[in-house]
Image 1 (cartoon, rainbow, N blue to C red):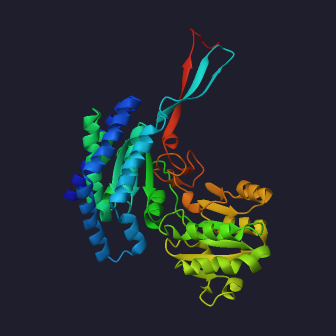
Image 2: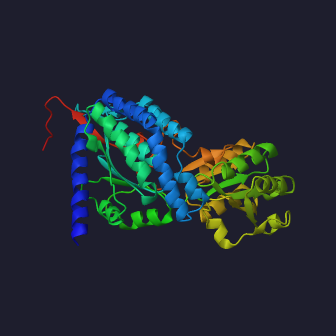
Length: 424
């Protein structure tokens, strides 16, 4: 009991410190925030050897637990990936500061001048698994958007996350900002997650989970504060009859195989029955040659003995591995119906040279991201020009799709008058 009380005291202190830091950060200048971001990028580069050594410890522990290749890939940091993290911080630094942006301005009959102005959300709790780079991405996005952040990475990246956080602490101090703008929960105790979800005595304004179904499901079930989340990334590629085969092959293989463990990886391939005779066999052949296991419907199985039967659960599955489910559908209507029934609302793509069919797909598919003639692996805030993302939201309130700087703000109304009073 004393351990729980001690942890509770520690967590409440983090919340209280974050709330104070958030009020200070909300009025910090863009120049000061940008200086902190550049400092953080420089610190990451300067401490790269130590961070990579810490990451090797995390990888060794994860390998001992047989977590699988996809998860190991998410944990791993090397020089190139760490440089990519530093460059992402610099990209965020170059983006326009959303805080104080006037979204709209108008005058009303009473003579009042009304502006809708962007403001930070406050304190953001980020709970994440497997990806140490989220430590930096989340810290940077929250910092630039004027929000304090409390980071809680999983135990499997604890060594890496601790050193990345230390880079931000030094960077904030050098920029003369409150170091509590970015804090980390440095304990593997899962009770800390529950305390964050309860709101830390009303100091946490938003929770962002980044991880698997178990984590996201728990967050959505237990959170007493708003949540930006997606539970699954069951992404589809639909190859239309009016598609060029070479383009279709390149997009499908990239969407599935570039990185199989990310939420934007394609998990289901739908092929128009009108082009099945010409496209289906080359498409599954290209996937099989790339090392992807194919689970298909009866028509797909008949084309290659290496295809195993797909069962009903396969259409719901987020494999996060070199596995894809393949089905022949009767045109764009059936493709859209399949996505509506089995999809998770994350990212879907159509490959087609028919502009009308593509427009119909983009208009009717109700997912956070819909694409035409592009790989689903572009479902990423950095690729959208946001510098980075804190996550991809598949809900319909406040934020949807990549959650970048603008999505980490709310707004208030600034009303200016000349002495007006309201008539009785």
